Image (cartoon, rainbow, N blue to C red; front, side, top):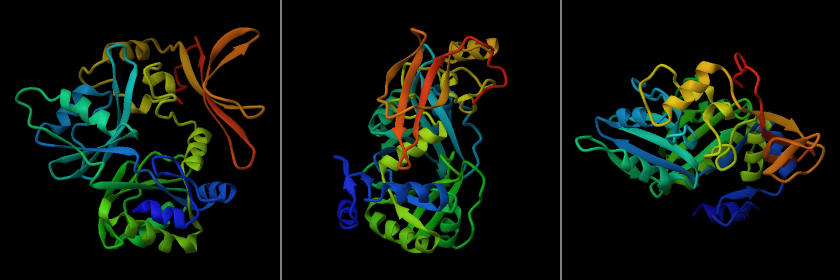
Length: 330
């Protein structure tokens, strides 16, 4: 359904049907920084939890405190193993009455649904549903994203970070939420799958006067690395503890126990990390992951790297750091 639209617009597609680009990488990158770009992110997971124990299940199994979320509020949180290492980073959205939406990394929806199902104990009132087939996901990036969304909505949306609500776009009910930005703004749009073409076209039509362009995964990855945001399968994996990859704001140090809590709390109380994530500028195109050396000694790993459409060579690295990290929670 969406593939035909993308191909008719000149897109080059990945094997899973997600656009890589629309033939103008330099223009798409420019508009991501100066105007707005619309992306298909339907390969990211969407899992629903219903039932009266939906908050408790997430709260007891992940790093952040997700209790008492307001309607429309979103909170990022992380599932960790007993050693405090990252299994998955998700965003939990209190999007409907008696229902939470859990957004996952690319290709991780089914895995997170299975993981959550295993956390439902006897006596819990919770039902886990994978929404991959019924709900589609787009995202808007760029400084004019909010202007475009408000032009589509009947009333302006709350501009606070990690908030959202349902609006009508292209004749369909769409949940629009504002998440942690890669540049100046980042909006997600969760639409019914059968309405995805209408929603896409409506956003493009309204956004055209504001300089919107469709773009794909190559620009998305460039924005992520440029912003120093840890990525699924790169910095978000079992090699790292959340604090090592800069996710301090997605960990609560006052809530109750969760898997891996003791390790993470110990690192925070000592205010010392063995490794830290940093953004780096590279001399030229570089493959990642690759080991980093200083005077012949290994100092860490280049975990993500990209050459931008404007020939910048950027990367994210996780490097050894035995200094105090107090006040340096990037």
